[in-house]
Image 1 (cartoon, rainbow, N blue to C red):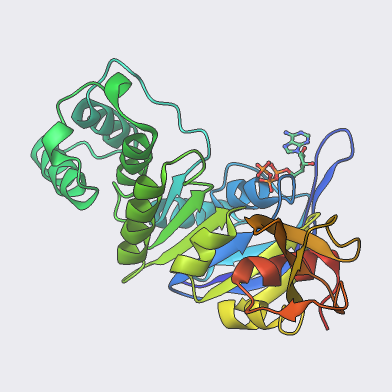
Image 2: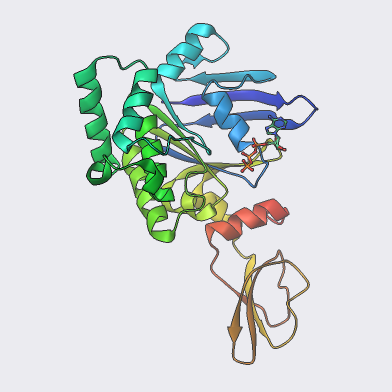
Length: 289
Ligand SMILES: Nc1ncnc2c1ncn2[C@@H]1O[C@H](COP(=O)(O)OP(=O)(O)OP(=O)(O)O)[C@@H](O)[C@H]1O
């Protein structure tokens, strides 16, 4: 399910321009939306989910224009949304919580609803704890409950806002694999500030900065932005003054610094293999070609 966005602008009361003329096409499959805090990602997700009206611009999802009431209704039927701050009722079990949300979503037929919930608990690997109260769930388990509620109506488009924040590495990997599996037959839009999540799951991505499109393309194209711009410098002295230091490791009597910079940050700097994070930082620092 394709998403077409043109000239999308959102100005909040008080004048904050959260989105500033965003134009973007998002194809079917898994798509990453990267951006630092405040870049406008949540605003964009909320507009897609029909929870927020843009100030101007157009969004068409699967041929349905969000500006019309019919379009919004059609999109709501086909979109699942996992917000950053999904509230749950801690005293409900996972199964009861999903049942409650399913009722709110209009799944009135009891046996079909129960069947769907059991299927989804299986999909998110929570069947064994389905009858435990949510207050005992880990962050990762709650995120998986969140995905299950977003999938209740079998959406063709799944919009997920910063889902791996605060998860431990094992849960993060598990959650990423779940999203990749779900993207097999639907569009999954993953918004995050964690570059590695996108590197591990998406082929294509967009980068937002201050409400504008800073980049769109494939992961390898963003990676290529850092080609020839990543260096290691090993020194017993201070960090190189030029470029951005992205990591430092003790080595011998000194430190090994990894630096993103357009030119060698020190005379003895050695070129290093770029990662997607380096590509992202090179883009953000404006040091790309
Ligand atoms: N309801 C609101 N009223 C006023 N300003 C807002 C509102 N919601 C967001 N903003 C501002 O709009 C800008 C974009 O915020 P948004 O939450 O969309 O960014 P984000 O990329 O999702 O960041 P984060 O990762 O921190 O959630 C920020 O400057 C934010 O402070």
